[in-house]
Image 1 (tube, rainbow, N blue to C red):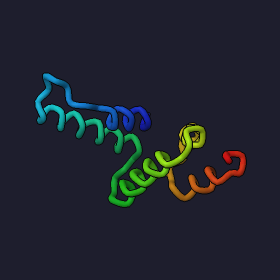
Image 2 (image 1 turned 90 degrees about the vertical axis):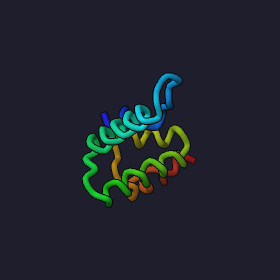
Image 3 (image 1 turned 120 degrees about the vertical axis):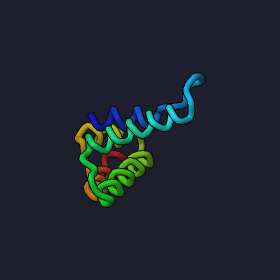
Amino acid sequence: VPEAYRQRFRRLRKGDRQTYLEFAREKETLFDRWCSARVVDSQAKLRELILLEEFKNCLPSPVATYLNERQTNATFPLGRYSSRSHWE
């Protein structure tokens, strides 16, 4: 599930017994899995992925949850969904 990979990537912290190289490799693996799950195979898709995440991070939690449940993958439609008057 793409969201699970994103969360694992973002939450991963270096362990006390882990080398920086091991930590970097684990971060890279999780990032690659996240991108693969979202079919990010171009710079444009990577841009959209990062903008989408940043947009959701700026929203109230109930709105972000609503959008995540609908697995909306583009920033423009997110603006339309999140602009609904019942969120205010």
